Length: 271
Length: 164
Image (cartoon, rainbow over the protein chains, first blue to last red):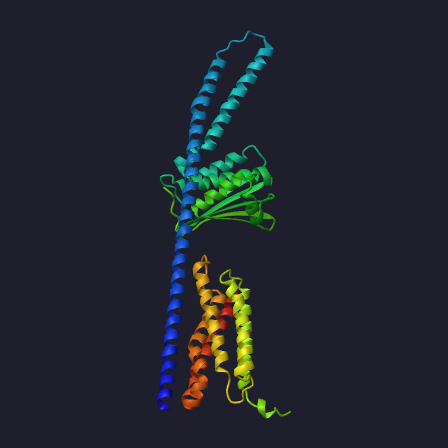
């Protein structure tokens, strides 16, 4: 009787221990397998992300190269041709008192001058020499002034000159293009009469704020438009933002629209 | 009102508890909608009902005054362990979510711990209560501790569920 009782007791203790060990092993295997799978998925995801970024970077670089090429051709080829045409135009001798031809002559000179100016403007807009020579802050300032010159719009800048561009990194070109596109959009769609651009360089992170009094975008509208066929400019902005690992936020406060670009710390310019 | 002497024991409540618990966990695992061993999962409650009818129809009394049904609780623990194992197997084959520690994971793990500890206790309890009464009584401490652990896992699951 006592022997049977001891056997049952032994069976019980061994049974509980064996079951518990078995279950603990299954549980540990389960957790480790899931963790491994999770790590694998995460590495796959980051690989996809980096591939996507490489693609964006390649497209941004090729876009910049193409802009540079077009800008140079416009400036050197078309600009030179127009300048030559202007010189030839000046050599024309008109008979005294030929009022009609004189008017045509002056109109033609005026149009050639305007064309040269336009070609130069487009060429500079496509490839900013100021950005290359004087850095991001000067380029933004110059672009803003040029954008509103001759219009009733007032644009002011308060940029942080602690940020200095060295060797013109690709990221600065991207920031410049983003701001360029945003300002063009404000002018084209928001019909603002006042624009103010500020920047702050703090703890190696760079923040830009564009404030205007037009009819701007909200975060929801931007998110809805950025990947549609109509929003090509916005898609370009989003691609560059992704490339810079930056944050772009749109919001409205006291009848003013704010666009904030935040390049987080550590801000490593892409060489 | 005085309860009739035949029912003046709480032992049958363990049987009721076992049946209700099995029913609720069966619904829980079926509601998880895991497309894995679906057919077997649907057969398990039928097998349990068949066992219940045969066992209490021919071999044991549901309202036994002196003891609860070891057989019922052990069979319930066995089926519950099947549910627990099939859950882990399904999850291992499934694509991983961002978080593996989901509310259903905590419930299943708590249930698993409770059942593996108590399976042999339930299975041998009637025999032990006859032969080693003091040891059988002390075994309830093991059961109670495992039950507290089970409840902690359920609490964790409810907390996680609330956060989501």
